[in-house]
Length: 442
Image (tube, rainbow, N blue to C red; front, side, top):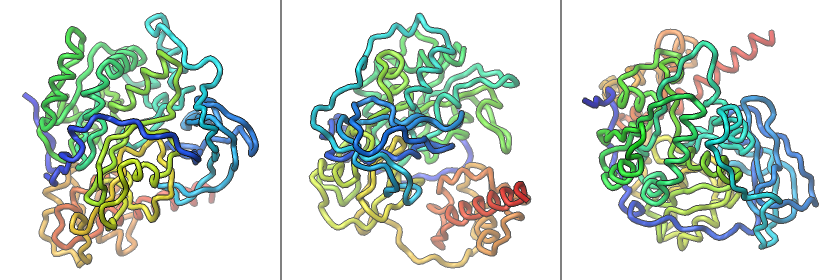
C-alpha cells in the first residue's frame, strides 16, 4: 500500500493549458547568453574569449572542482562577449555570449554512436560529468556528484521523480508521453552507474496517460511505476522517497543515507543523450504558461535563449503580466525582467496575470497553526518566520530545525496572514551560513 507524506497542500494545478500540447522546438536564439553558473557548486571557468568561433556542443566553460559542471555552447557562432550578464537566480554572473551564425553546426565528432552496455560504471559516470548534466527538476545539483557512491553508503534503489507536482508545469508529463525510449535508456544507464537492480517511478495520479505510457515502456524491466496521490509537494525529494518506499531521511540527512538516489525525468533523458550519442546538455524542455501568455506551450529550447524569445514563440503576452516566474509558482523565483537567459534548471516560464497571483499585504502571525498542519517536514513555520524576522537566526536553527525546511512554500499557501515565511527562512539560512563562514575564517 502506498502511503502519502504528512501535510502538504492542494493548489489548483492549472496544467490544462499545456498538458495535451506536444513539445514544440523553439527557433535558435540570435544571441545566446550562457552563464557559467547553472548548477549548485563552484561556477565554471570560461575557456573561450571574445572573437572565438565555437560550435554546438563545444565546451566553453570547464568545471572548477568536483562539485561543479562543464558548460557547452548551445549554438554555433562567434563569441561576442565574456563578462557579467543578467542571471535568473544570481542577478548577474559571468557568461559567454555567442552570436549565432545560423548554421547550428556540431563540434567535430558529434553526435556519435556509442554502445553504452559495453561501458562500465566509471566510464559512464565520466561521460555524464563531461556532458555537464545537472538536475533538471530545478535543483541543478551536478548529476555526476549525486551518482558517485560514497564508501560508507549502500545504495540499492533508484527513484525516478516524475511527479511534477508544481502547478502549471507539464514539461516532464509531455516527455513521458513522447520520449519514452530516451527515459527508459536513461534509467537503465543510471541504474548501472549506481549498481542497483531496482527502480521506482513516482507519478502523480492526475497523469493517468503518463502512468500507462511509463508502465508499458518499462514492461519486463525491474522498474515499478507507482501512482501517487496528487498533493503538493509530492515531487520534493524527501516526500517522494517516503511516499514510494516508506524510507524516512533523518534530520540533516541525504537520500543516500537511506540507500536511495533520485533523478528527474529530464535528467535521465539527458543522460541517455550524453552516453549514447555524446550530446552534452545544451537544451531542455520548458513549459511556458500563465494567464498572460497567448498560446501556452511546452517547448524544446536551447540553453542561453532569452526568456523574451521563448515568450514570443508562444505569441507573446495576452495581457500585461502581474509577475514573471522562473519555475513553478510554489518554489519558483519572481523575475524583474524577461531579458534573462534560460539555464539548465528552468523548468518553466510563467507569466502570471492579475488575479492569478496572491498579492495581498503581509500581516502579523495570528498563531492559527495552518502552516504547521501544511508543513510536510513537521516543522513550525510560524516560529521560523517570527524568529527570522526578529534576527534570532541561531535560535531558528538550533531549536526549530531551520535547515530541515525544504522551502516548498506549503506554509505560505496555507497562511491567512499572507506571511512571507519562505523568504524569512531563506534569509535566516543565509545569515547562519555567513556566520559560519566568518567563524571559520576567524
